[in-house]
Length: 91
Image (cartoon, rainbow, N blue to C red; front, side, top):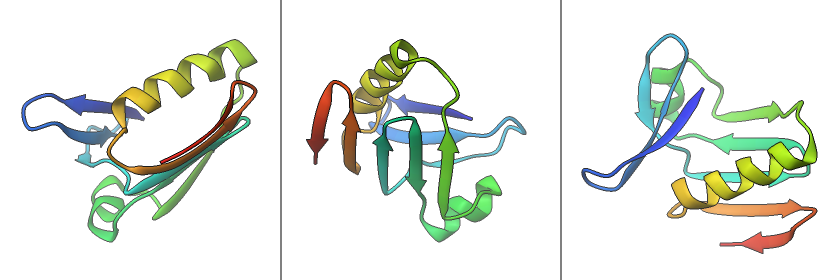
């Protein structure tokens, strides 16, 4: 899964490994190593994902720090909760 910000219009989007793309999540959380993305019904259907998509990040703490920083930059307009070793942030 690729999560990116398209600068033409400042729209975040998600792209699956099958090449499907849709608007990014309406809200998301990163708590420790668990990432939860909440998609609208149309985006979830287009992506072939559940509306509440949970991903367990099987990476070390340094990688979680990089994921945290990237998501805060890319998905800054969505509602979020981040609670990692670096601290807690809520939108």
